[in-house]
Image 1 (cartoon, helix red, strand yellow):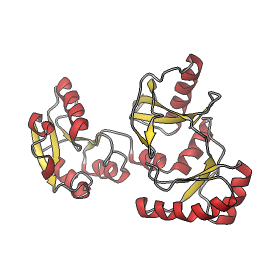
Image 2 (cartoon, helix red, strand yellow):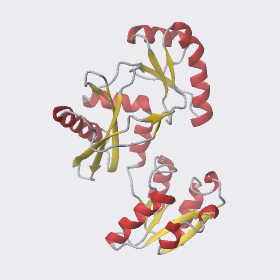
Image 3 (cartoon, one colour):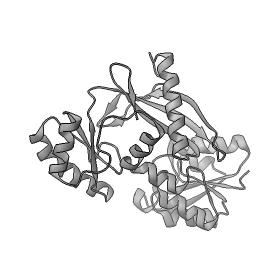
Image 4 (cartoon, one colour):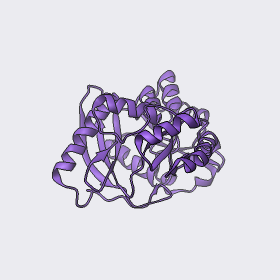
Length: 286
């Protein structure tokens, strides 16, 4: 069991982690920005430490500040919650180097799954269903056109890094691809520092279903349930419903098996989510 855990997040997320620490009898330190000094999580914490000014870039996303807070308060583990630095491989790597347990996947796993092109390759090797698409990034308009004609329009241009709809465009023909490809690349470069994009078949109004998994360091993986996240605005989830309504039992079981195979192939550990799209015929894709 850990001696003390730093919670590197705020709001409802920090409260959930804090409650789990209380249930386990583990002291917790809440990291906060100056804007959150009087938040409920700070007031309920065993200890709290300020990590910077209100701007997230100078507090919750400031890796030196977060690591320093953990070391100064004597924490031997760090829980990033979700969002902010939760998917930052560099933070996980630094934690490892300074002797702090990062409560989450290994840094190499975060890096691997954070690159959508690499993740698609890994899932293909594991036998997880994929939408037709390019095996890696497309480096030129000519290559993109050839790939789009092979896949079949409409196609989705997607950034290999990041998410949230940035670096993403739907092209329905060659002319739209010519116009939208450089826009997607520029947006991806601006948002993620990586302008790489790939193409995949565009699904019109699919269901977005996520499978929650738990994995230990011995290769044991458990799919514990699924949720429907189809109601979105600008590619951001508005409502998540669990269990996913109207999902046939066989489809749910197949999703669980695919999620477990994918997580095992990635050597995933800790809690995580495998995301799938379901078409109107009930076929699902990673």
